[in-house]
Length: 244
Length: 391
Ligand SMILES: Nc1ncnc2c1ncn2[C@@H]1O[C@H](COP(=O)(O)OP(=O)(O)O)[C@@H](O)[C@H]1O
Ligand SMILES: [Mg+2]
Image (tube, each protein chain N blue to C red):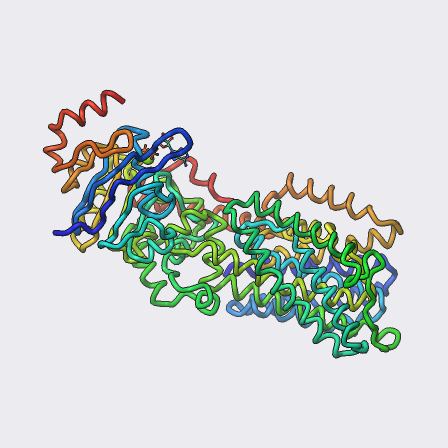
């Protein structure tokens, strides 16, 4: 196993606050790695740094050995690294199907002007909508979906680009237990098909259930990592949560 | 496509918007009635064909526009529609950046003026006579506007917020107006520039202008239609709804916005040139005019921003109304009052504009039902806020 994603000494300062203060860890190819830590410990900021939404002040992010910390989000996506956001985000006025189709358009602007989406891409998008059980809503504006349906749509959207690595920011946040189970199931299934996962989640049962490895952050740094069992027993982890 | 009813209703509304002013101006009532009846019959005919109804409606609208100057050949009648068509082109073109991406440009009059000055200057420097040849020069006005849009878009879109974009574009407009006044050697300052006129006689004079404006309007709407249905257009709409998320799924947001901005400048430049040619004389304050931007934005806003039909409808209603007001009151300024009142009415009654409001009415029940059913059958927790997101 090799590190497909490596974060090396990343720092990010917002005014007087250092959200990331020398954060380093790596994600093994084919694994499900969870990133946990108290609120405000910098997990979302780290996702933003890895996916090009914020530029680190210092440090590097490597995707299969190549530095990506200066690339724009769309380039990083094009290299097979997809993400979801902590708050559910869909293109509210586009139809559910169009939401998924947006993510297929990876051609240049000039090509995009001359092309329409292909039938094969529509078929693939419909297939993914069926996969997450919202195919019958394909023509509905995404803004009118329920919260849970939006979460499922996000997953379908991100999958259509055939990412090799997926970063999920609190995928089980705010959904009921039945759906949390469904989401965990999908993650495991997709991992079986070869997608590497890095997941931020607060639901410990969920995290311990699906993860191969757990990385713990506190105050912008990694304070512990290891198997779910090792992390569970680590006194530093308990301290970070209680101290927060 | 559930758009037929909507399209038909809109087209009828805009035909009425054009014809009522004509009645008011004293055109034969019989002619108007016959024209409306003919259109109504064509619409009904289109209605029976399920599959091609959208295209048919569009075709009928164009056919009606082509027939119009032959039915109503008075100078007044064709002048009103000439301006309305110019604004259909301008608003539809503006919609490519303003409506599709949500980046509201309040400085597109800059391109209008650039086109206007291009035709005036080229005709002057090359000693071109008035005639059909100048229509080709009008196209050059579009090219010039497009070229100027490159550095302008580059700067206006550098900062990635809509607010800064709006401010910068307003600044552009006044900057160009100032240049128009002060670059005496080129623009002749506040004394303005003339455009050589063709020696077409009497009632025929308007006809070539009318068809030039119609061609521009049709091509611009076709361009907007094409973009709306391209991958590029999907990217633009995604940017409007959530720019970060769009970037996160691979849309090169900067290039998309930039391209949309430059493309949208071109038809506006051509429209400016046609305006200059038609009105024979231009001044900085008439072509770099904030009122143009106000009309564009209000047209798009009234009809429905980001929809294809919205800006067409908005322009067809507002432009004739504006002219009629000026004609009746004999004073400029009342159109501003009208705009203010309209703006308030639209905000209060249908904040998303005519077209989206009608579409929403038509499908709201259906959508909510579908969402609720899917939730039930798939064991997803129904969300009370489900309908709240539908706008
Ligand atoms: N764009 C930003 N500007 C200013 N402060 C920010 C920004 N993004 C995050 N922060 C701050 O950085 C810290 C880490 O936030 P975040 O990464 O969201 O933590 P987590 O996801 O672990 O809860 C918080 O104190 C937050 O307020
Ligand atoms: Mg977070």
